[in-house]
Figure 1 (cartoon, one colour):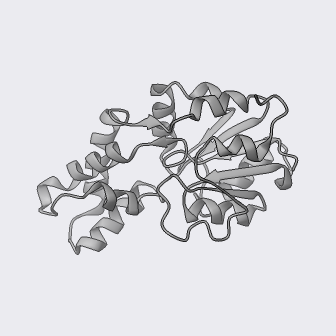
Figure 2 (cartoon, one colour):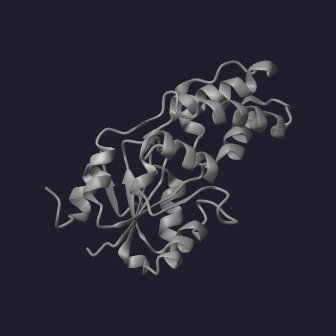
Figure 3 (cartoon, one colour):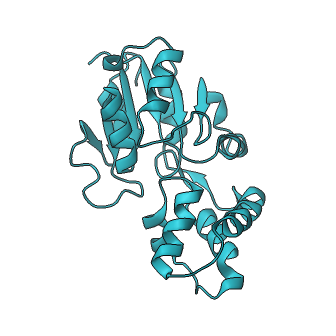
Length: 217
């Protein structure tokens, strides 16, 4: 298959940020008697951005707290602690270096400014030609709009692009935009999210075997 553009999700695909997100979520709800949110519960809630993350928790716990208050508290904590425990998945940098001949972009449902801060903190930003967040385009994943924006920006036909992600929102966005989808089975994805993916990989290193760059070792 001929690939010129690779689109990556961020959280749960390139980086494991679950502990820092969980800590920020627990900080946000601490004054309101929710009870602690476990790491597993946090992972089950992530994927659609901070507003959905908090609103889904509110619905799950049946609490009547102003959504904007919790979002502000979450962002207050997360903006100061976004890289306390967050790390790239094993082998991520080697994979990105090996794929140096390809256009590489990130489409995240994390806010763009926070996505860039995390990438800078982990020294990963240098590998990417473009980074889009939840607020970069009017709609975020699972809408195809962010993917279509990237295809247009780099004048790339959809058949020459791959999208690697760990959630149903990634798979739906890629499929709706006409690009091939790769399910990151090692990430946060709920059971069954990968059913309709074109490809599945159990570690990020599997992306090299899939793309088969001519310069791979």
